Length: 138
Ligand code: ZN
Image (cartoon, rainbow, N blue to C red; front, side, top):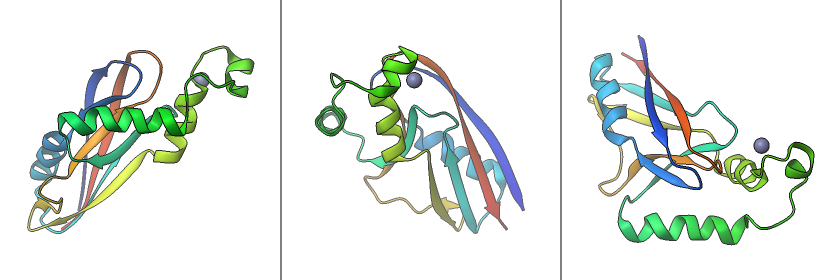
């Protein structure tokens, strides 16, 4: 059995961390699937899906960590070629990855107590985003 839905929302640019856990859990409920997996995928080369403890400290720490790893102020060949200012966004997105798969057991996401599923906007401008959520199982 399989079921999919899209989650749509608007983001601010430059590391907007959106908690989509409740929407993903709702898609799993709508699917009626009790045992299987749910895949959450962000189509787009300047966004990522991950998990984090969604609390105010980390919502500042994580963007700071990305800035240390992939500083915005460096010279990026991507920018020299396309002049869109988001070379750092693409590098961050490639490293973090566009998807996550979570086991579904007895109809529930098997997340840890403090573990939330997040969409991470890495582009340098606000975007309209659409995330694919696909549940496969029985
Ligand atoms: Zn670009």
